[in-house]
Image (cartoon, rainbow over all chains, first blue to last red; front, side):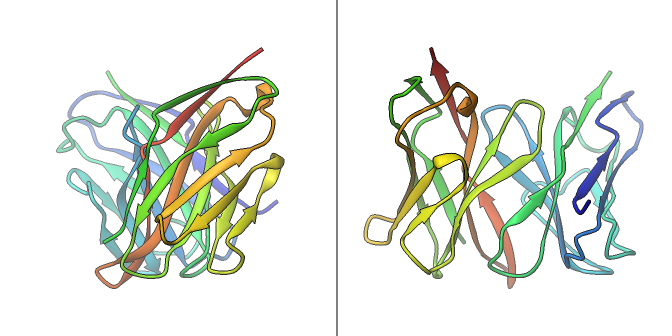
Length: 112
Length: 115
């Protein structure tokens, strides 16, 4: 079954800790994206990657980091520098320019 | 850079009545436009897409949208709402950002369907 898998579904983090969200796809897509969703704000782009070993900052990259060592994987690290990390995080991938993106089921991160 | 404006944050309809969710966009290029639906605590599912072919686009679950370049609009419609249509809907434009192709989302419209 092809698709995008995000894990875990729910994540709790203590203030001051880094945490990594996993995103894996088996769709053979080149491009991958991370979005943050807050109520009433839509989806905002954190980072995106068009090819392996290359990624660009999106609109709200501060306090986040990513890597793209494999085509299938695009993990997101939420660092302690992110001031308001509690949110719903969505990973997506797409085949090429001009096509739609496919989304994972999301990870809800809560800072306690 | 491109942008998307969803004109209503909430739309309420009765079951069996028509649905209209409004979206305006701006883009320096010939855009690709999409509508996605999101049920609570779930990922986004593609409803339909416009990629410079027919201006009236049909999607899943009876939804359709019309691309109007002169009005820079891409409104989503459905003739008859079902209870299962209650969800949040996002209008999305794909465009270029510093040489890279990215997706820009509207802030979403919550569709409420009453019996």
